[in-house]
Image (cartoon, rainbow, N blue to C red):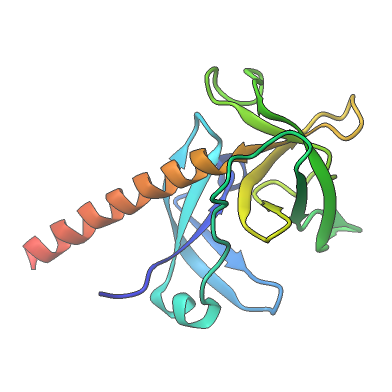
Length: 180
């Protein structure tokens, strides 16, 4: 029945919080948003926004329908801190490795997208898109000892986490309805 709006970010961004505040560039802010589900394996978190947000924000990014490939152009967006406050940043680069394994960052068997679109501390949870503006991944880490070595959780893992979160929400709604 009602519209549902999720915000996807990294688990390490929300840490162990049950609720978070979600703010947008236009100054709109939503307090006490439920952290619905976190995947520690992929470092992805799904936050549930209030119903009013769906009407105000509309649709977000659509997932890419094509497989991510090496040398593909990608765009990273985020809000890293500059002089103590968040500052919007958008950069362009290419996929270096579409299935990079990084057990020190993400659990074994959960590949990442390695790319050259610059990200900075604070860019975590920001989208990585293709040239059409479709989601390719969620930025998760950078390797400071290397140049242009940035990592994103691939869209497939992000979608799997969102589907798990939606299933949890549906179960909660069914329980609420049964109690009645």
